[in-house]
Every structure is written in structure tokens, then in C-alpha cells.
Image 1: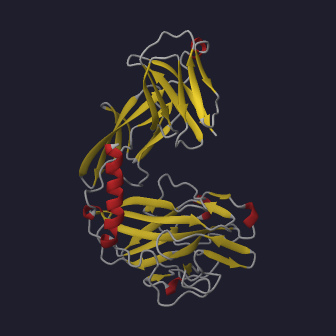
Image 2: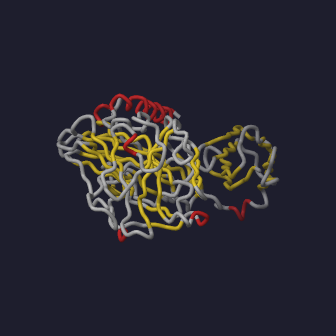
Image 3: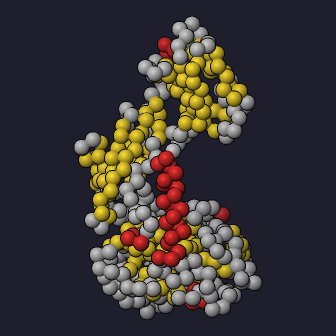
Length: 405
């Protein structure tokens, strides 16, 4: 719990502190020269430009009286979409991929408030959300830093800016969430002359993964995304630093896996079990231990070394289940208000019954059980699946799953 609270404190502090340290001007597109009235007006957002001739990135703001570019809802023709801004009242939007025009792309570009320093590390982040009427989804949405403005003065058919993005989402998945904002974040170590940031898909069609996501929106055969809340923060300005974080201790059922660590691209981390390296150069990994295991992460961020640990507790569901069937019963399962655990022909011991949610967090514990029947009340537990473990201080007696409906 202490580790969890410290994590929340650090993340809250970072979110609060970053507003004064962010090198991106007008990061949430709140400031404008004019309210947008139609599509393709990113230049109305103060400090932001369109770096290509063929593209026409869009600007949305709640100040607009036009249904095309208002916030949170937009509609034109047969298309409609709804999304609140991640913060404030505005956001931008770009086409990241198209299936009818080769290498169809749009980008956002701005001048940073100061040049990046040589060898210094920066925490870079922005949020992405797929527009409701976008018929396709894709990966490769990223950020590129440059000493000078980058542009493509050529009109169609190709709008692509052929540069290697330095920041992409961790593991570079296809982004297909139309409900929630998706965080793209990473670490960038500067060369020392960068003054511009450009956001978009810098990969060709041949090296971009895509899928048909919204069959009802196939008239819009593009990967079209909202962009909001862009940050470039010097790591050494973050209160308390950006320390190693392995995650909060958790539990899994044997045979399952769990993600540990952080989803931050380019964050140099080495993972250990004891003194044995299991992988390196990645901030987070999936693990599937067969026994309870402690993982150690060593993070090297611009020469600053920090460490953290996480314990993954393995619940051996099914252990001795056949022999326990005749002497341990759970009913009803699923249950709505009360479930009963009954121990038939079982030598009375001082037992503990623990319920875990799907994240491995203990949500209910009943101790000092010495009778042959115990009831567990729903109380404030939400609908869903839970794991239970009946144990003494010397052994696990039974484990399994139960459901609340």
C-alpha cells in the first residue's frame, strides 16, 4: 500500500509540475487566434502549423459554433463523433494512414520554447484517440525532433515526411480506442540542437500495420486520430526524479501472465531474478512465473541508476482439487449477496480465507476460521470474477475462482 501511495504521489506531482516545465507551447491547443469554423484550420491554434502542402490537419475547439469542429461532438454529412478533450476544451486531429491514397499523412508541428540540451534526457508524451467515424486503425504514430522545421512542399500523391520518429507508443501497437485517450510516452536523449517537434506517422504504408476497425464507418477509409496534451519535460526538472518502477506487488493464477514495469519507450531498464538477467533495454515485460517470484528492475536514465522490486504471487489453482472436492464446498457460485464456504470432514484449524481481484489485490480477508462453515458477504464488492485462497500459516488448503453477479 505504501508503494502504491508513493506511485500515485509521484504521478500526481509529475502531472502538476509538468505545466511549468513543459517546452511545448500551447500543448493542449487551448490558445487560438480565431475559433475554428471548418476543417483544416490547425493554424488557428497558436504556435501550431501544418508542415505539408497536401495535408490539412484539423483544429477542434468548444468555442466553435460549427458542428464540423466543435467539442465534444462533431457532425457533417453522414459522419459524427463525440470526444471530450483530454484537458481543457480543444484538440487537434490528423490522418495517420489511408487506404486509397498512397502514403496519405497529416502532421502537427511547433517550435519548442527552448533548444534541447546535448545529452540531456526528456520525458515526451502526448495523448491519442481514434475518431469514431474512422474506418481504419494503425500504428506508428510518433514524434520527431529536429533542429529546423521539416516539411514536404510536394502536393499529392505522397504527403509523407520521411524521417525516423524518435518517440512511439511502447511496443508500437495499433491504436484503436475510440472511448479513452491513449498515452504515447518515451524518453528522448537530445543531440543538443533540436528546436522543433512534429507529430504524425513517419513510416510508409508498407511498414505501417493497419486494420479495419469500424465497419460502420467504411466510407471514411482513413486512420484518423485526435491529438491532445503534448509534453516535452526535462527529466531533471521532475520533482523526485523519474525513478525505476517495477509495479505494485500482485498475484496471478498459475499459467497466467502479468505485465510488470512501465510502458515508456526508450527507457533503459534491465530486469533480474536474483542476480540473473532475464531481459534488458525495456521498461516493462510480461512474466508468467510458476512459483512466487521477486523481480528486480535496474533503470539507467541518462546515467542515473535507480532500482525497484515487485513480488508476483502465484496462486496454484487446482492444487489437490480432486482430493479436496469431498471436504470443501463453495455455494452458490456465482453468488449475489452471500456465499458459503463449507468444510466437510475437515480437521478444524486456524485458517484464513482471502479474496483477490483480477489484478491480484486482496479485497477481503477473513481470519481465525476454526468452524466448519463460513459466510462471505458481498458488501461493497463489484460484479465480476475473483480468486480465493484458503490457507493456514503452514500451507495452502484450497484455491479457486468465484463470481459475483
